[in-house]
Length: 399
Image (cartoon, rainbow, N blue to C red; front, side, top):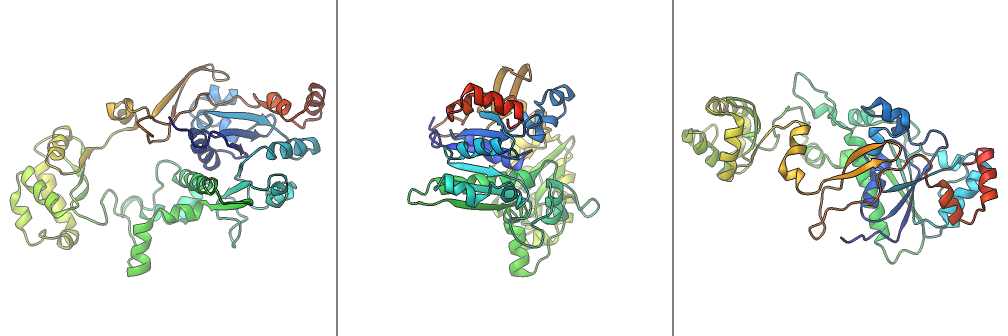
């Protein structure tokens, strides 16, 4: 398949999730991504995950999730020789991505103004919790903090359970995706003649994805509230109890609602003045849900959802993660990549790819997640270092 970034080199100085996820997207598009890691420890994600043995090996499942296709070099950015080696590497790179707190790279003597002198057309992307300026810019931030401050938790759950955390790190993931898009856009600008500094705020990235919710507040003064599994824009649209199991239905259009009433054997609901149009249904959401659940109790969810889908009514089951991964819709489209006997892990590893296809092919990388520092010597040799110089750097702790 097409690899539009295959001629580009990305230096990934990031840790844990937002930055590594960003650089994973670039690797899937063909970029050579080099992780620049701290000697001896590396990315913190190497120690995280559900398998303690892999954590001990420095190949934690959290690391394996978003580092396939990358190379790893260990460089001590606080050491004089380490800085020199990093600057040589920068001179060969097109992109640098870091997710330190604002100001850390400047204090190391490796900030944007320094790096662009070594690579005049460098795209430099800094990912942080709150952005490079503003009253909160210097504070630490993890996904949990961003979910709470962005308002995401305030509208997740229902009136009994909210505020509630989304079950995976959406702040990190959205921040990483935002960064990857911004970097790709800069790389696509053929007219660009100078370096660019991209400032990605995880907080702002998450808020930007809350478009409908934020628009309702900004333009209509409507303060959003937690609705659990209900869709705030339409009814009936949410999660419904059936004779066995839960069923998601999104009858957002008038014709879908009318078809739903027919399908469940309650055609009179479509003629009821309480449910006759969209606004009326929103005003009487709870009553309508009770009526539909009474009808849906006649069959299990596994019977209902194909029947509704055949009639053009968006519907689907509520799966566990293992159930959807085993489903042929996912199993047969190439979303999951596999590597046999990954060095360091000493076992087969499966990874999630990009979630799209180009000309019918899912993007993929050729190599598994790297062991810590596995490419250090080879990369330094490419930069012109001799074996003796590399040995000295090792002895001094520069690499």
